[in-house]
Amino acid sequence: MSGFQSTEYPNLIEILVADGGSTDRTQEIVNKMSEGDSRIKLMQNPEKYQSFALNRMIEEAKGDIFVRADGHCLYQEDYLEKNIKVFLTTKSKNVGGSQRYVASNRAQAGTTLAVKSFLGNGGAKYMNENYTGYADTVFLGCFWTKDLRQIGGFSTKNITNQDSELNLRFIEKYGEESIYISPEIKSWYYPRSTYLGLFKQYFRYGRGRLLTKLLHPKSSPIRGLIPFMFICGLMIYGLLDFFLEQDLYFFIFLLFLIVVLLGESMRVVTKHKDNFIEENWTGESPSPGLLSLWLHSMGSILVMQVGHFSGFLYQLIRKFLFRVKGW
Image (cartoon, rainbow, N blue to C red; front, side, top):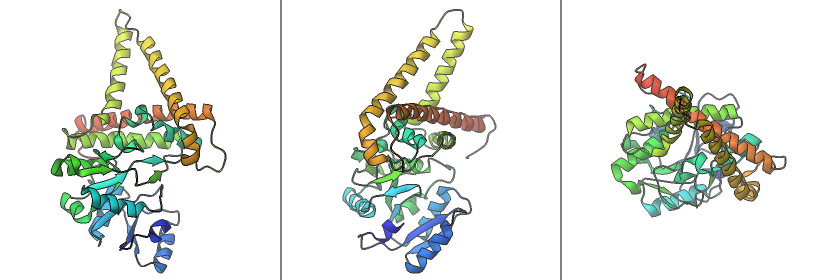
């Protein structure tokens, strides 16, 4: 937050901080900071989820431009200025940077490298640090406040993936040039620090992707379906090979997939290792070695795909078997 306080952007009106009942002294710290800076305002978010917090901020916001900044992130000093500059230049409805990662332990290191592979990012443009141009979604974002209000804010039906769903609404209403990514806008995200946490996160992502697909059946990107479709296909293939008398060579195909995972993980680690040490590693100890990064990048890819598939399947069962609407 101190980085936003010291920004050189001259028209910062307020810094809204939403807290969902944290127990880590966040409220105490924010209240103390607000005593010395009247722009800082603490807001309560009893529902705890981001969509509710963001919508309260949108209702409360006094500025014409709304810039989103999440916790668990680091921001370049000129983050606010770059957002405003690109936003006013492009005339898009939402602009932002790519989703860069930082890591302080081995599990985070694995995720940081995994998302640099198609196996970990699905070809999403907002995961490409060098991409400039229009896309279907963007990390965080910068908006006209009035646009957010007119379009109805963030969906509370999506506890996760609410940012992608909002961007699809902008695209459907205003066209393909509504969402813009610029590499000038830089922030870094800390992924989950354990594989269990990563699985839970991607389980929720899978649930959110199905809900987004149901809300936007024509405009939702196909990459949100790939983990579910691929793993379902693989399971069906395995069952057919088991029950049919004819050998379908399932285990040979499975071995091929393992080799692809091994090779792609090594390619990504080898290509990005030096840059990872310079830009992404924030741990106090030296960066993990090549073997460790290779193993953890493979582990992260597997956890992300299985978690996404599991969440998608879970939400599918809730929707069509138990007739549960929304989250």
